[in-house]
Structures are given as C-alpha cells and as structure tokens.
Image (cartoon, rainbow, N blue to C red; front, top):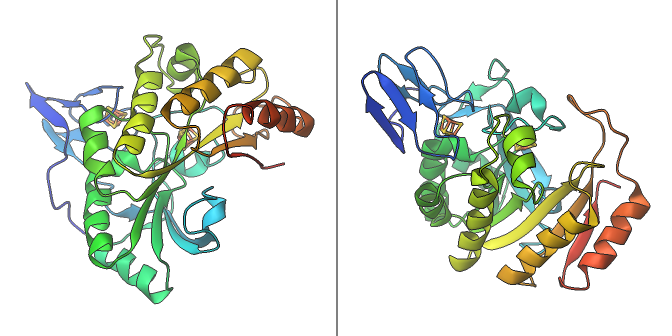
Length: 292
Ligand code: SF4
Ligand code: SF4
C-alpha cells in the first residue's frame, strides 16, 4: 500500500518538517520521526509510512471501549495502530504505543469497512494505541464508514490541536476521551515525556472535550486513577467540576490502575475508587468504575 496523500498539518522549511498536528509541534530533521514515532521527514518532505498499518483487529463489546451510553449491547470492530504522542509510564498498551517495530499489516480503508460489514458491526473503533496521529488514514476510513452507515468511534487521549480536532470530529459519532489528570505538570512532564509545564497538553485535551460536545459527538470520559499521581481529592474534584461545566450528563469512567510498563506503584484500592465515584456523583449524573 503506498502513501496516497501528503501528511496533513505539516509545514516544510529548509529541509525541516514541522508537524502541527498536536501540541508537541515536533521539528523533524530528515531521516527522523516526531515524538509519536509515526510522522517523519525524508529528504525534507513529511512522510507517513504507517498509513494503514494495523497492529490489532478485534470485535469487542462496545462497553469495553468503555462506552456505556452509545449503542449499548453492540459489538464494535476495533483497530489498533502503532505509536503515540504521549509516553505514559503506566501505558497498558505500551507494546504497540511505544514501539513501531511491531507485528501487523497494512489494510486499505475498504478492507476495514468490508470487515465491519462482514461481522455486522454497526461501528468501528479507532483505539488501543493513539489513533489521532494517523489522521490521514482515519479520515479515509471514516468517510467510507459513513457512506455505509457505520458509526465512527474514537478512543483517544484527545491531545491534538484545534483545527485537526475540528476536522476529525466532523466525521466522528462517539468518543471516549482520556482525561488523564488535571495537572499541566503531569501532562507535560510525566505523560507527554517532555519537560513542558506550559499547560498546552492539558489545554488541548480540555478543548477537545469541549469541541466534542459542541459538535454533537457523543462523549464519555475516562480517567485511570493512579495512586499518588492523579488521585488527590483536589485533582479529582477539579476534573469532575470541569466535566460538569461542559455537561453534567457526560459519563465519567473512573478506572483502576494496575502496575504495567515502567510504573510499579501498587494497584488502585477498590474502596478508594468507589469512594471517588461516590463523590463525583454529587455533581455528575453518570459515574462508572472499571477494572476493579
Ligand atoms: S503528531 Fe507526532 S510528529 Fe506531530 S507534533 Fe505530535 S508527536 Fe510530533
Ligand atoms: S496516551 Fe494511551 S496509548 Fe498513549 S502512552 Fe498514554 S496510555 Fe498509552
């Protein structure tokens, strides 16, 4: 499968590629890739060699995304990719998100739609690793899915810039967005993997959530509660207040962390999680716990 189109949201200047897709704004020299590992520079031109590279393909219950209020009880064809613009040290899918030398194969958008139709899947989820860094492929799949009456679902960290967000959300029916914490510092230093404390990552995610709601995309939010990282009462309360300020009917999934990748802290205490959910229910209508 050849790359069919130039990468979107890039600028090429003096042999350097500047990627404007997410707040990392990578300046990529020839022969290298940006922080996500999938958008690169070859001879001064932006390249997307992972266009159509699928690392995982499965039929999941939609509740596993998790989406509890969108087509409940249905199955959803779920696609995984390679790479991520974050480097969460507790990533549960780090095998595919932090590595691009992984098993998989290229699939045309038409093959994805055929697979969804063959399995009577009413929706397609772009998920597992971070889908938004594969913007060009997602757009091609989404246009085709819509033509066949198939719903498009994003499971994402929501960390892209506003113009890219508007483009993808115009074709999105539902999204589960990670609100990983409510701290600019944690987003920039611990999750983004770059020493940026300016708040650009947190702001991008908050704006993405607001835009989902404004554009009529069904949205649910997930926060993996990691002990001593994002579980202070102040931070959880600030996150709940933000969600309520957008719409108190937006479902919030508080999920339990377990040690993975580079993070060895003990798992989230189930009683702690249940209590956090009880507090959040004072201001949000739908709060769910998961991974217990
Ligand atoms: S999408 Fe990738 S290459 Fe582009 S700015 Fe973000 S991390 Fe960098
Ligand atoms: S944003 Fe998601 S896929 Fe990316 S590193 Fe973090 S947990 Fe993994």
